[in-house]
Image (cartoon, rainbow over all chains, first blue to last red; front, top):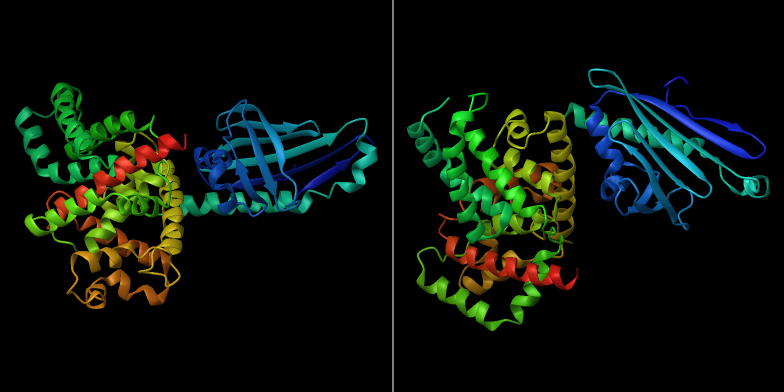
Length: 152
Length: 267
């Protein structure tokens, strides 16, 4: 996938997968810190209204997203490999975040979410597209991480 | 490697800064005295391991930071509205006010100045930050260490120091913008002017306020600049040596006890 910050979605009968990649000119540990600091998330990420809880392995968080402000998503942090990979999920599907070092202060951020089940065709039309939110998420992360990197 | 006399000299030179740094981390005079003493003992014990990769002062601050972190990591952080909670508690405790008035009237370090209260207020409110953000902010913005030195003191990377500074500073700018009536007319907290009226009833508060640059510059609305000015006020005050030290330390001790009770009750 080209790391241009553009989201792509693959739709299948029983699932839908959206992904985005972007290259970020910042330190991997800083990007990871931004992605795992629940209390600070809504400050820099315009797609997230709030996250309650701790983003650590095995914990559950309550997330409110701009895409559907009335709902509170209860999500489990299923897998954490510090500074490299994190998987969040619920019964509907998983969101996978990965960070891959490309060079000194150059990191590839990739985020994908696959939702689906045998019942998916029944409610697929009610789930809004994620593309814009994914692109905004990646752009916000890049902007925040790079502004920290540029600070003196 | 450094010798003992160098350590003793350097420790004595930075003792004032170190002591105020520890106080601003712990908000406790007793814990400050303990950590200060332990820092010297540990530095003395570990002096042979000092390789001169940083300055001796940086090394001493690293030891103190570690000791304070060990003490603070199990303690809850304070809420942003700490001063509101403590004000309510103080209003219900006449003995606290009586002792304040006694200090005000009898101690050579019992003066009340608004700028002293600004520094006191920062000590309390900044304890709402996550610990690493708090330490980075103090070391960089109040004690003027470089990013590299802060990274050495806290055993992290410069990039992570930047991250903690950025997030901590952003939060503090927002908190003071929402709370401090000195910089925002809609700010909910007027305690510095209010208490000034109690301790200095004959003084014209407005005349006092205009002596403070942060207040004069508030109309310009540059939040980052106003925070820089707030940091200058804090950096310019030694909480143990100033003319208001005894009064402010009495208030700080009251706030610390109040917070301990509050956090325990709300656990």
